[in-house]
Length: 178
Picture 1 (cartoon, rainbow, N blue to C red):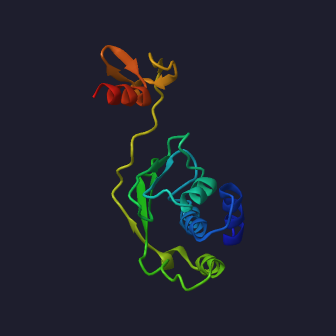
Picture 2: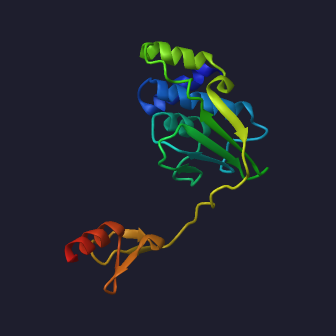
């Protein structure tokens, strides 16, 4: 798919055009162009190190989502993106080059245009990394919180004074008793 078509699809998902979405388009374009290494299905896992606009483009274009358990967010504030293919056991990391995104003298549209005309290799340091993917998503039973009644994933239940509590209720009760 052409870069402009990828951008349209990402913007439709994200809601507006911005340089961050353009970054995510370039990341996704690299993965799509290396389809033999990274086929787009549940065996592809994306680990992103930020929560900026770029991650919406990745979800929209590569089908990696929290719901399928193949989209992992690490809150490091870095424009780093690691992809794992569980089938062929390959992994690649794309890290934004410090010189790639810093020209704030350009207008937003000029920055977007410049990014979309670039090759992913021009904007990112790209390297193979050790294959060490996060665990596959697990399905767990739910337990009702004994305080609010909400069904809660069993592994997230906290026990306090013999009661099984969801995290918000546990934190609220714990705070009151301190």
